[in-house]
Length: 626
Image 1 (spheres, rainbow, N blue to C red):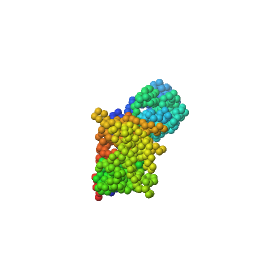
Image 2 (image 1 turned 90 degrees about the vertical axis):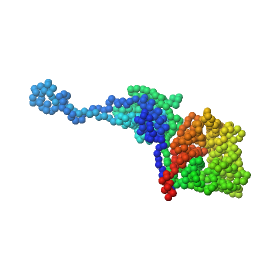
Image 3 (image 1 turned 90 degrees about the horizontal axis):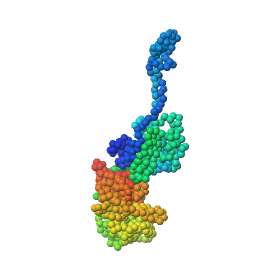
Image 4 (image 1 turned 135 degrees about the horizontal axis):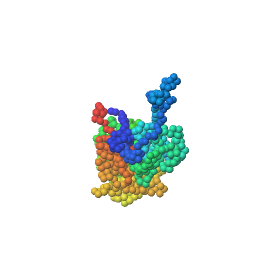
């Protein structure tokens, strides 16, 4: 068997492998830095800007003519270029000299003249000040690509810099250059001194640069012209989802409206997250394929993820270190015994732990501090039917006793406290009609329970049992489960939860209510209704890269993981094999899914990842068995 896995990297949907529309093909080499959706959004910005940019017009004077040797002898020319033999004839035979002069028979030297063409350069200077933060930076990105391609088309050199760093040109490599441009920040407004600092580059030889572009906010046109910038791009945000860009050249002036991408994509571009990188880890040391019917299990704060294997009583846990070079570590596997069913699962000590049962007893499996109990005990949790899991949390950090919380088959929140010192373990129900639970931190759990027509969100301390209500909202009867996401900050839970507001009918899609506890002093609750695509299955609540909450759902055909917000819906991951099960971490921004062909995918709503663990090929599997 293999003890590790090889890591290979590549793009999931880069522009290098997709077919660009004919209008965008001239920018293929630059759009290859982005994934397919980003390339399409940037292309929508490039086309109107390219039309307004106009053709490249070389300056009329690119150098001076200078002599370079003798080209020929001619009958006409200035007498300072007359051949020496002709001057000898004037001394010896003056009459013949005059005759030849009157008849145009003298011979003159004709020098070879060459034009010393100066190197063509296109210089772009970007204003990264306070008035250009946010959306205008996307226009900077588009103009950078346009001018880089413009220079390549005419055989010129493209150089660029930042307005607040006069006479300093930046890195030219495309991916690094764009990330450096978008990452540049200057909180002050541009000053005339900055402009004059750039003027020193061409004041001695103003014809050395074919085009000098100043790209930034309006208001400095006069100073820009005085500093020698003959080409200006002025960028403003309008009242709609567009940018107003005014392009001024010595021959024309045009204004164009440029569409902006959606908020999530704009944030990713501004962060420099151009391409989603995939890390594929083939699974060569699994004893069986992943069980597609079981959703993956996350460890606290997403440090590890566990999956069950199909056909055998075994689970495998992968650690998810921050350093990608350690992703090839051998996963830890554990088995709970033949002919026994695993009722719930939690990651403890880097392995999957839980409860297993036989006909008479309930056994803690790898759960420290807990001992078996007879199923006939009055306080024993009511077990689910075969094939169903009980949601659970295991608290094993800090001082003993350790605690296990689970929702049994009748909806009771069961607290199982382990033995400690002279105290025996105890089991009791602490809440009824529990619809969801999540880890708050190492000492607290958050859960949702129904009380009458309300859904209450309660925070409970595992040591002393202190419980207080975080929020209470009215909920319809169809809200039979609550999805939670958040963390405890300063001893108070901050996060969001969601439940079904209405079920899907023939005439309308399902609606979910997303509630969020605000961090203001009053701890108010913000509510919004989100329409879920027809046939989609909501599996959790998470946050995008801007810390905005939304619903994580599987598409109706189960070929995509969706992130659904009130005004936006986007695909986080797509596959050609249907997704069997998915889960969302409740205390960090991570999502995991298993596909029917045995793959494990881990990703975040911000677009980082995804990580993929692939099953072994038939050849590799046979080699492992051998």
